Image (cartoon, rainbow, N blue to C red; front, side, top):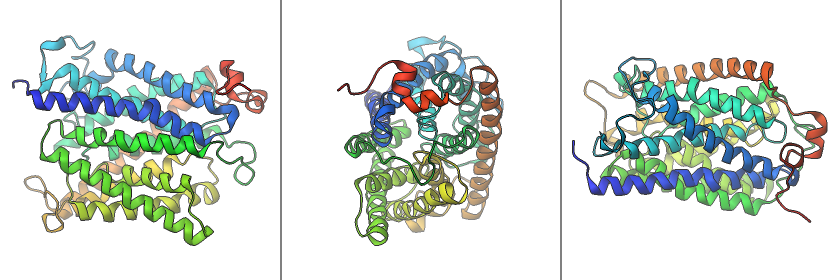
Length: 403
């Protein structure tokens, strides 16, 4: 195929937007939620992951995800991107497609960091993230977007409900359980040190998500526009629902709660964004917020797992819910685009359940194995004295703000 200038321009923009989600969006969102003595460590994790994953994506990650015809994982035919700027992927240059997908590979392990803040070693973050991208993210991406066995079964995941949110959420829960809780969990933890930073980070995530979901159309077309519309409406609906829940429960809605709801709506609509209509997007966002809110309490108070910044409850559960409900909401009678040839609602639902089960199972098993390797090499949990001092100074010798 020949390169389309409009599609290329849009995907260039979308690529910048998705990287913007991690740097600085996710970094600020997480930094505002931790204690002052750990702000810089969280930001450092996001920057370091972006650097590490970028190199790994070139030296194998992209190839394992998008090359070859094997059903479970790609080959190394695209190692180092040998075709260079002359290659075309669809209607855009392959280096651009490589970069767009790389930004997804960056933010996904970045999400996991939120579950283990304030107590994980910096070396553990790097080693876990590097191994995880190659062993979990790249294979699952191949299954769904790279022509693998789930793609062959017509699984629906427009922008990453399974590839991004289910993998990151599941792995975050496993790693948080393996690492153990923060001191004082769950009752005696300090509140977020700067809700304003969290709001600014969430706003950047919201804007960047237009590139995340809209860019996944890989073209400047009606699908991209519909995905952006669904993304925005779901986020708006979810934010309002979360605020209303807090208003009813605590007599006043919080800023952190409002933007957490927005993020829950964004995660929930991600797998469905290019397949559903606007009314369905509003309903999906509201339901996603309601379900994710319940899981925040469930994980912390019933399961007793210190998923510190609710990665599983918001990103994982939201992405999983959207991945299941897309089978219903994509129906033409509900304003959706319909199904692939030979598929109907019941068959699609079966494929979605299969895809979700496989993604969760592989993410959990592989993450346990990677955590074991990390524990036996560089160690997982920071020393007690480092945790007490704060990881900003103990791990990096710097503070986010100096008095």
